Every structure is written in structure tokens, then in C-alpha cells.
Length: 164
Image 1 (tube, rainbow, N blue to C red):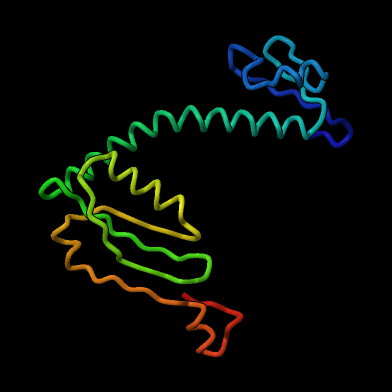
Image 2 (spheres, rainbow, N blue to C red):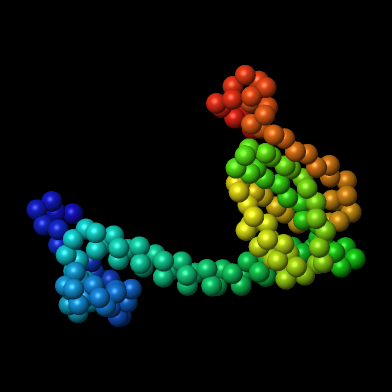
């Protein structure tokens, strides 16, 4: 970037140079479009444009990825189902530094049921969480555990520092 001038010109191979440009930016004179070139009047507009392009790109990419992700999830469910059921093994840590590991929930072996459980679990998450699918016969042998890391830190004499 030239330190003397805040005008930047970005050349794109996109057929429509107005793509990802808010029309109000053009009306306000913050961006000038000339042929295939976009000229940004200041650094902030350039960064806002890049952020807008990234949001658009992520939304488009995630649409395809969601279908692929759902197909992979369906294959994993099919691989781990027994008797029409699948086990979800999960754990995590909440904002109060309580940690739980290897908890098991058994749900019907459908993508809808697993995604419903995942949605509920993620909505109520207050910290780092994890989960994966297992066969119910394997999950029955898993022993769950939980710890109160804040209490352990207090008892160990360092309440200002929590170590997992």
C-alpha cells in the first residue's frame, strides 16, 4: 500500500465487478467501479469489501459442505448402528470449570435424531465440548467421569490458576 495515498485499485477476474459491492458504497462514492477495476477510497472500505466477500464465499461453500457433512454423518451413523440405535459419547467443560468425559446417550440411528441431539447439546454448551458416535455395545463398557477443576485448584492451593 502506498503511504501517501489511500486509493487502492483491485483487479479481479470476476465477470461482474459489482459482485459483493454494496450499492450504497458506490452511491456514497466510497468505491468506484471502472470496467473490471474496483477502486477503494480508503483502507477501511477495502477491509469491509474483503470481509463481505469472505462472508459470501463462506455461505456458498458451507451450503455444499453441509450436504457432504450430512452424507458423512449418515455413513458414520450407519457404520455404528446396532438394532436401529446409535450411541453418542460426549464430554466437555463448562464456564464454572466443571469437566465431564465419556457420558453416553443412545438415540435412534437417524441423521435427524443425531442432529437434533447435537443442536440441543451445542445450544446449551458453556465451554469446550466434544462428541462422537459409537456402537451401543461398545458404549456400554465406557465409564463416565466428572471433575470440578475449580475446587481441585482451590484444594491444591492455587485457586487463581486452574489446570485440567
